[in-house]
Image 1 (cartoon, helix red, strand yellow):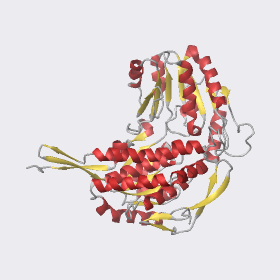
Image 2 (cartoon, rainbow, N blue to C red):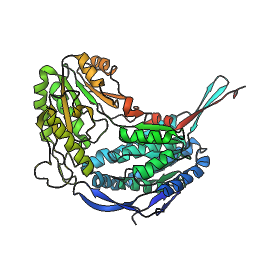
Image 3 (tube, rainbow, N blue to C red):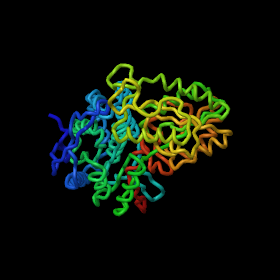
Image 4 (cartoon, rainbow, N blue to C red):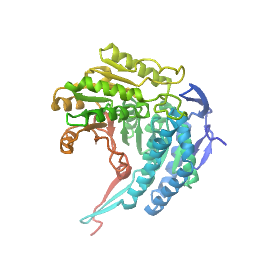
Length: 475
């Protein structure tokens, strides 16, 4: 029986206190295919109370027992792997192969990485006669976005469990079904009552209530910078910890000594992955001014090779964006790029040819972009690339850092020493040299308005812990 109209609270699937339903729309068809229940303050209170009641016992579980729980969750996750991939594909329009190989795989990867990190994590450290103890911070409110649903759910839930915390999860109401499947995974793994709770709902009616709740000790939020500011202000009244992973406008510096054609083409692919709906996407490509027109030609060819269409069809590279709201925002920004004088290289407003419904965006490349243009300043969150020329390496670094964001940056060079020097000067939480493989053990998080705190593996475990000094312990 479907749990779409229920919440998972205190180890059971329960109906909301006030029955309000929301349609979940398939972005490839623009049609609703199921409904979820929307929560209220009463549901949050119930979930937080369950987490608070479970915390004293669970926080004292030995590390070995928490490890065993995480390993059971991984086993159950694997059993539901295809269900998770199908859910992500339908709720956010991800091509099915991408949903399997990237979206569902990300959740599995974080579980495995957290298990590995916890196995060697030390929670106590003797410093002279003082014992430094790292212990669970308490009840955590986890608020996650729609663009990488399992990635963000698991890279919060897994380290919270590793630390000994209890939690209430609010997935995005736009793409909530994969979160419900994940809650079923948690139930099947034998997660103790109250340790993991799920309440669906909107940001104002559930997310903000969680952030301001006096019995919540920490908020871990991933989403837009605008929403993150609201969460932080709401949490401030109760002086709780707030960890945030927010927006980005990541630069991609193609240095003169890079394999130019490969660096530009791969940069297009990296920007457009997940239909451009990644906070760390390299959306500002910086190229030497003398090779700017060459870069436009390479980028056009790479963009026009990508097939946009039905997520369930073989060979689809890009599906739709997630919602009408996102579609409208991206269309507005594409028109702004044209209106402000950027060169439209390929793509542009409207849907791709032969697609008359669904939130599909034409893969779009702009050239002759300056860093004061709207498309270079605002996070677009769609398959739109801006190419900016630079006259010198110093100017490239200056342009790269001239943004309120600082989540990620990219450097391409055939000289690793050169790339490392440039990377050291970029103000971003993650810098990627020559499009490396994803590293689940690297810290992930932002500088400036891209947030605070770090996620992934042991970095994430640390964020869910308080530090206690027991002075005189060794006397």
